Image (cartoon, rainbow over all chains, first blue to last red; front, side, top):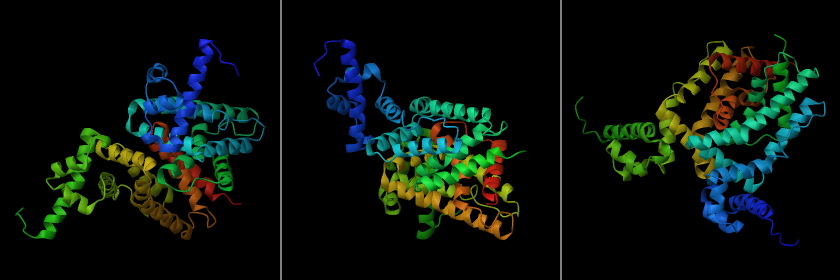
Length: 195
Length: 195
């Protein structure tokens, strides 16, 4: 490809290089060891450029995770709610098997537990958009009659996704495919009960 | 009380003073700021004494949390499984409302996500003994016919406790009493379903 003198294109390239450098360094060194200086050096951009776009290392990592997670954690609507949930939850878990993304996710979750400013960003960038998509998918299922109209979507969220995060903080093995199916079956049966 | 020259009693006093100092400093400074030096100074013991008993700050904190959690996270057996679970889960949540214990718990969970040695201790000291007690309580409920013999106790653990840890890492409000009842109802209904 020919070098582009277009400043916007150059800026996009630096942006992408920064996010890639952040995850590559997480894979090589582990989140705690990575610095903004190191990311800048690896990406071939200045530290000033990074701080123009992001307030902190955690914020760079959050965007890198968000971008990597975009496709695997999207919700399909095939008309089969359990299958769509299984696909999305498997996608979420697959992020935790890639060394760089796993280290970045554990790092920002850990930092979020200790730092109230990053906590807000973890909630706002990582969890909230996915919770919104989840609720939208559940409402569609209610409209399509696949899920009871009175099903409590907040309870469903907790029952479905709780196991993943519980197992992560308690250092229990993460769910495999068949176990995910059990959790999805159980959670949907529970919220579909008639009062 | 009169001063005791008994070395064992003096040692127990130092041990208790160390655990109290660890939680007091967490409340005042936050886990990340607390050092073994600071704990030693506050407890009036030497750093060497602390390292004779614990390998790290995290290990001191884990024992302090475990001791504070002993009573609130114990399981009763009143013959009413849902009520006993509600009491135990409320007790677990109450630990997260005490400034010192909350900071210590968030700190060791965060450190455990980043440090594989502390991860093993977090699992072994905080989670495993409570998971074992939970499973024992569930087996009693099965023997007493309150819970289906075929109920999957691992799924029950995930559905019941997942919501607490999910909400903690995602920075969602922690469950209140009525919401805990909904989760317990839903989880028990799900694992009690006949195949």
